[in-house]
Image 1 (tube, rainbow, N blue to C red):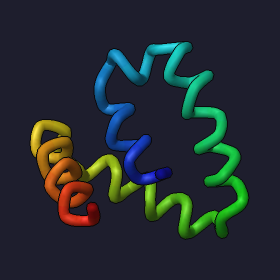
Image 2 (image 1 turned 120 degrees about the horizontal axis):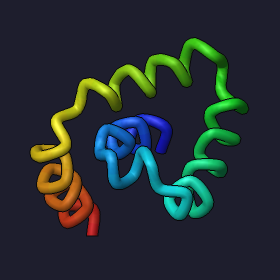
Image 3 (image 1 turned 90 degrees about the vertical axis):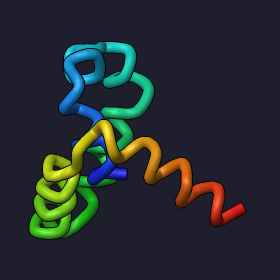
Image 4 (image 1 turned 180 degrees about the horizontal axis):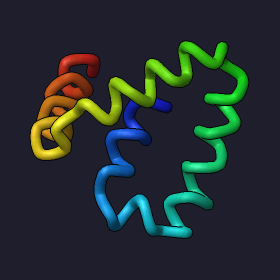
Length: 67
């Protein structure tokens, strides 16, 4: 979740949205704070490395394979 939210925050629509922060951001940050700091930082770095244009279709395929 930390990695995915970091990737999503590359979009200005999400990065500057109080709605997204209220719905997901605060909970994800709370979860990140419960992780070891190195793990949370690594997840954020991986998220920032994602290409958002490629991430959504890849996640859709991954989720479809899990069903």
